Image (cartoon, rainbow, N blue to C red):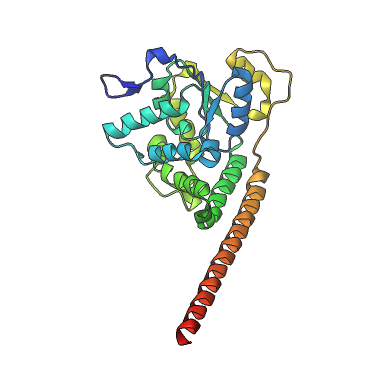
Length: 278
């Protein structure tokens, strides 16, 4: 990694960056399905930031947390670090999907100026219901997250990275919760995308439309397999319930071990006192 004269991080020429597509749509607009589709069509890895923040290894999660710590970007140091970290996270990938990339479109285009930006879209009310379920899940999981370091990092990233969102899309700074603070996000993000992406590089796509329009955008053949549809809204509720149940079981085991330890300690103490009395 090196920096240009304006202080921005660039990918070295010898690295021959291969990122061809930036999925610019909001979370819960089919970005997980797009990740799987692009892996098939472009035959390479896709950096899915939403999945990485949740299921990524500890090192990846920590890198994303460090990225969030430089949001909102206020200084040249913030800007340079964000460019560096985005390049690091997407190096060797054929595409980027979900957040953080969907809120760093200008920065990613500076790294990959030839990339196509495909903004995934969804019927607004359907998106809001699914997006609300996502944030409600984060709210419900956070009190239990101390039992899982990975889940804790995901929750913290979700809250901390929100600091970038108002800055990117041009709404007043606010906390992510209550959800009323995000009510205008869909419209503001649409304006942001059209404002920062050159028209000849911008495409809109609904995953419900399947392979044909996406393959036309990418100028690739239509594969002979069903279009992947992943991570439906129903999973959010089911997955949250199952995860909380697992964490409660972990808590019960932990409390049992604590109780056992206390019991052994009291017993050992009583035995020691009895010996002293004798």
